[in-house]
Image 1 (cartoon, rainbow, N blue to C red):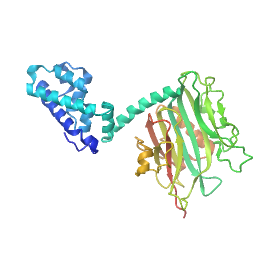
Image 2: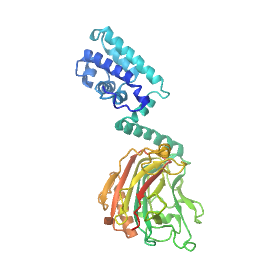
Image 3: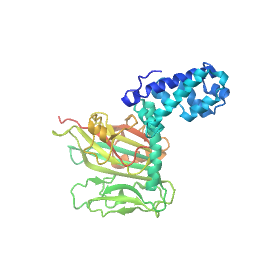
Image 4: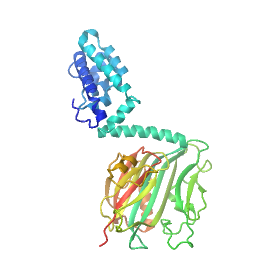
Length: 411
């Protein structure tokens, strides 16, 4: 077994214990069941249950300390294995070696405040596979916990951000935004679901409203952003929190609009007028960001971005960062700010290519139709855009997610 897969000091300290435990197990199990240490052999010869036998077989054949420590059973499970080995199948020296290795392993776990959970967290920094599994397990636990605390949850949130040259300012970019929420559920009778914030301005008070409908009309009331053909008909109206006097208002669902545990679909869309610079300003860093606060726990979040070919400089970047941080970490920020404020995305960026042919999402049959409808109503040609996607399972809620767009230099 190699130790090269452990890079941090804390993890490297585990290597001697792991190396000795694996060697002791290989020696004892090889004598008890033969050189081919497989789940079937362990189950047949030692009468172990399939789960324990499977973990043992994976552990003894693991290539690396991190993989071994991930699969090796807990000390009680190892003791069950040792008790199942008949005295005549291994020598007293082999049995004593395993016993001592188990004691050392138990002692190692006891030095970690969280025991096996802390061990898995340490190992997740060493191996991408283990990190992915650890993030998913943690995400599922967080999803359940925050859902219970807030009293509501969402199955899938899929969003589209389409960036294109502004119709009102040659030095700016407009953006079409659409959010498709599927499986929104109220879990507690008294819980109110905060869906989205929107700014409603008096068209007579401003020359160019910052936010307009996807039909390029002023937003006169909050519900103008709801795409009714892709929203459950059972939702007759929304509760509105706020005055709509130029400040943000909140669209919410209470028990009158959302029956307990009933899954709902809500789709919204708007155009952000002159929301981005088109060209890199002299004092700027060359990036523009669109930030989203993930305001409810979701099983899955899909973030799509479409860049118009006339303003696409490079592929966009995606980041997740904590609210309240000092400043916003730039994409790929490796400095202290990035380490303090950033959250590991845990998912690669997908290139969807030109147009919207590949923008469908399995399990969300109405998403593609909603995006195409939004493009059509906004008068946008999908073939002029290049798409990218981030697909996240059980993402951390109540954090900011950002798409970063590289700006062109003015010619």
